[in-house]
Length: 93
Image 1 (cartoon, rainbow, N blue to C red):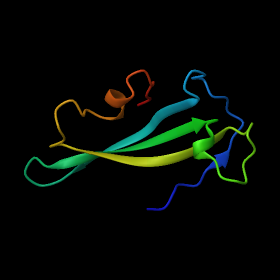
Image 2 (cartoon, one colour; image 1 turned 60 degrees about the vertical axis):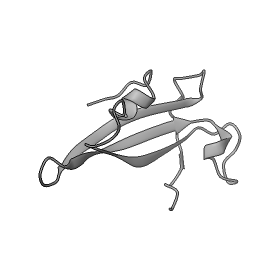
Image 3 (tube, one colour; image 1 turned 90 degrees about the horizontal axis):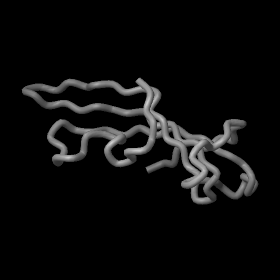
């Protein structure tokens, strides 16, 4: 699996405690047949954490990247989307 492009940004990290901001700027329901389907989320991450930076980034850089995440309808109970896993992270619709 290829890593998403990580870009330096002028945005500030709002969640100083974790050093990671997550927003969901877009989601799309993909319907399948016979009550199947899934929801695809686009998750924007803004962070200052070194684990998400490459050697070309400076320690003080804030970076952002976009990832896709899918949730299938038959997911286990309690897996209601990214908001359930990261309950204190605001999402946009």
